[in-house]
Length: 391
Image 1 (cartoon, rainbow, N blue to C red):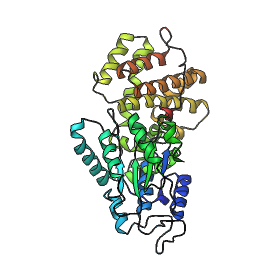
Image 2 (tube, rainbow, N blue to C red):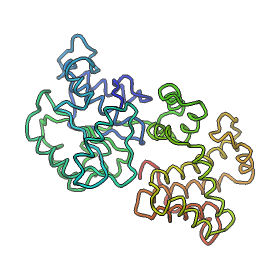
Image 3 (cartoon, one colour):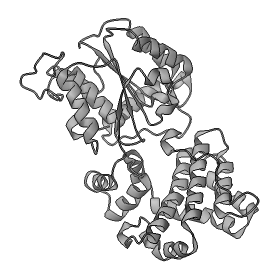
């Protein structure tokens, strides 16, 4: 994961200006909550903020100056900056969700941290159920009973803090309420509604906005080396999520899109047995990860977005699926805006199901059947539309 200064956070001028102001004043809250859509740089910003706090040359109080360095930024040259850049500073703790068995926890955490240090474009992915393990938080709480090793304060960065257990939140709440604590907590979450209200109310909230498509596309072309056509489709599919766009650099999004559209064909023919077979084949009888299923559903959403853009008179350059423009225009003539909205809500409901305990192949079968509108109740509207960042 790239270590960038706060002034160079991608597409987040408001959050960057606020955090730099906090560093310049040298007075920190006990806890911050970085919230916003997934993949927009919250973890990168949290580690950059931690690095600035631990820097030897930034102010450590409201009246202290920092000669020889920018007062609102980590210098990048002192020993503390070098240690925090490698996630090796003794007063920086970085917690994140992991999958797998508890007996392999130490090895899994060590391997992940090594990948984060090695790959400047590293992206956390959760193909299986992942959580912040209780043993890690217990170890951290024992450490918090002592003073920081080198710096004036200790910084704890918790990525995806909404993936904790209830007893972990209770322990965290107790530390947040301690006056004069020598620990600064930085929590990140793309689903802040899943955090207890008692935690949210004790954090200073910093909102991160979705990234503009132009920002993501330029990053893919300049920093990753993607071709313009690859960057265009990956950017549109990512929907402002740079992390997802980076994951797509090793995939073939165009081939995945064609496969996704073929899944709808049996449903449009009214062939329910055929739809069930292709759904199970796509899921490989339970072996396909949820992330790939989620991406397939989002490809259908992207297709419908192009249909709406054509209906609104958008130019060809605005279409993510411009290589299949004739099919898009044919559908634009046959589908009304109301029906397109209904289908989009069906797909959003399927995305919520993926996060729950619904069987993936059943989720896929149900979504495709309801998209086609064939069968009893298949053409009905979902009852509870929900914003994507709420689940």
